[in-house]
Image (cartoon, rainbow, N blue to C red; front, side):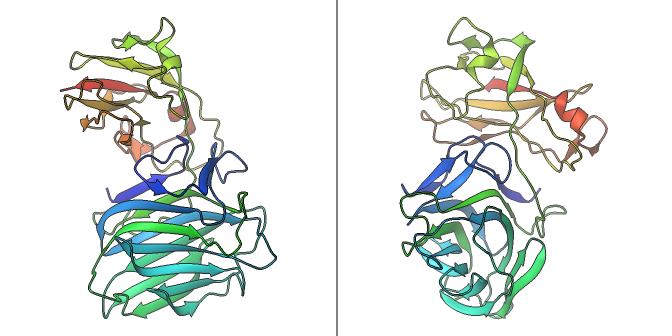
Amino acid sequence: MTRVLSEGFEMQDRVGMTYSTSSFITTSAPRSGLCSLGFGRGGSLTIPVSDLTEAYIRVGFKCYKMTDANSGNFYIAWRKGTTVLGRVYIDFTTNSFLEAQVSTTTQDTGSIAIVVGPYFFSIELHIKIDDATGVIETKVDGIADATFSGDTKPGADSNFDNIYMLASAGGLGGGDIGCQVDDIAINDTAGAVDNSWTGDGHIIVIKPTIDTATLELTPSAAVDHYTLVDDIPADGDTTYVEGSVDDEEDIYDMAACGLGDVVITRIWTEARARDTASTGKSIALITKASGGAEVSGGDVPLLNTYTKKILGAEQLVNPVDSAAWEVADIDALQGGVRTRP
């Protein structure tokens, strides 16, 4: 699979990312799910990626407040370290159109206005770094917009290792939330799937809701195990389950997803965990579809802090019948965790 990142901020943290104090998790009118990431003046977010020469990116973006009318800007940049190789820039001072930039020089300006208002736009990017056949392509709500072909390699760097978003100090939001991002996705171009435009997508979370008969881990309190692992955001060492013996499991029934007439393109498990003894132990996150076997995401080595995003297997289809996930499948899903060496 070639999906590099799916992020809807549903865990209500930014584990694995860096950010400024002017960006923050907000539950105010997200694009989907429970929350999104808000930006005030000078708010920024950096998403690390492995060195990429070509990628497709989706960002749900909304701007609904500015300090002064028609002021401020927001951009999505692809960088090597702190060197900007290119950006898609929205200048609310001029026309609110996407500008495709190499480094910080505009090469093309789109014609679809990203207007200030109470709704999200889906901004998609296709980036290829090359000194002759490079590409910057954009889409707004699936419609082609600003585009550039040619030299997208402004210096010696031939790939990028982070995506950087910034709401300028020029006016967005003042001390309050001025814009939001949600439902971020990144594809590279390797493999047979997820190797092109991401298309539209919405990310939600479902939490454990009932204990099953498989409860082998030790709870931090004498209560139902699922109540110790359903906190969003995670509450660290306040409530938890733990184990010191390899290959012990806790499995939980998951809550109903509440979805209706939708296409479900992928599921994955996600957790926050740490190694309390600093011995380099691992865990594996598990899903189990109705009528099927447990599917493990593989062993994930733990740190002794809650600073690592723990992910299970990403599954594009139901492993029981190899068909697309349906709402009934999700509503019958179980998930959990296994201790590993």
